[in-house]
Length: 264
Image (tube, rainbow, N blue to C red; front, top):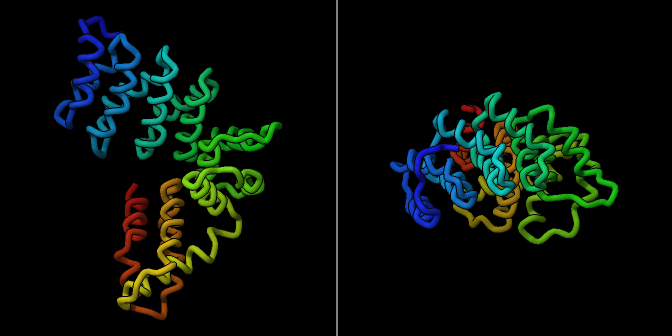
């Protein structure tokens, strides 16, 4: 812990809440504050202050907090690394997340597992399989999202056992996981629907029901952005007879996701 004098916790929280991008160093310094609530607030604020690429020093400071004495701080550090900075893929980040797979705190374990799944780390698959096959039948949403991030077809039968009982928002995510793990692919309904959306837009027709297909695909891309290039190609293959729709698809949000995935 930093031995330099630290501000009063309430003062520190006020500083964090009002921080902007020029204040990154101030917020990073507060990661060493003796009050856990300040460290927790500081680590959660950092993704709002830095863009890509995330500075190595900032990443290292958050990695250090994955082993913090406070469970909530560890959870938040794993969340930032695992989900908000999923594009940061270094051995140090992977090892920090892997070290939390057996954390005493369930939330920290879940965030670490999802973070490893986003990075396609081989240590995630057996853990996800075990999480989906608990004897009592229970499952946590982040474990399902990890299954979707991995996209391993061997997980599909286990995913099918957990489709019911979710609220509306979570149900949409779980459906996306089902599609991402399906050995048969994401489903002709969503691919045809996204293709139809480009046809409609290219020819000046209302989006209509086709917009729902994009909503589903967007949920899939949020979980597994690396799948965007393949999905984009599958949509383009459905538009070969329509140059206008093909042009729309090549300039679409899906195309942008595909370009971003290829650039990583």
